[in-house]
Length: 224
Image 1 (tube, rainbow, N blue to C red):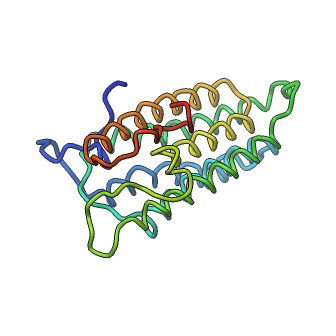
Image 2: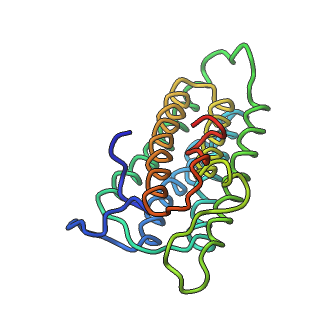
Image 3: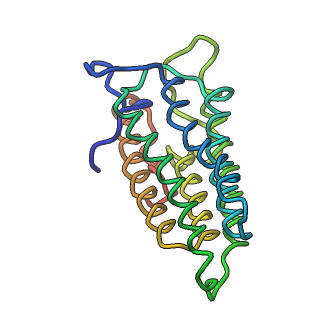
């Protein structure tokens, strides 16, 4: 499934590359993209409804991530700096490009089938489901604990990465709201990346826990 970027449980503590704490690294991942989304409300003040929805959805997504880093997640280990730079620049560049592409698309005809409403619904379900499962993950560790445990609750009995599944729903929702080729390509690439990472995560749990339930899939209940 390819090479996964080094963070969370898939990072290599023996790496000789420059490292920072996981919390600092995660803040560096998400804050620039949030600032890009936030600033775009002033950069493109004359928005139509669709561009406004896209900008709002992306800004909410990354603002939620920043808040989770600060107040929800419990971290151990670290992150290598080059992975942080790569991911952070990707998030901020993609956010800026998607918003700019939506601004340019205002000059074209509206899509024959308007998917804004189902997009808003999918995005809302995705962001709520993602937060709920992040919250469940944060409750696995007591105060001062750093080890990993097999997640429980929610959809964790069916898939090991339900938070990734709901994140995919979020970005499918963003694509439905946006209805541009760029947002489609981003959603596909994000989905493929999270498929690979969920596969690697399940493989990691199997290698670390003898009692890991083999019927628990990686990402999609009963399928994968």
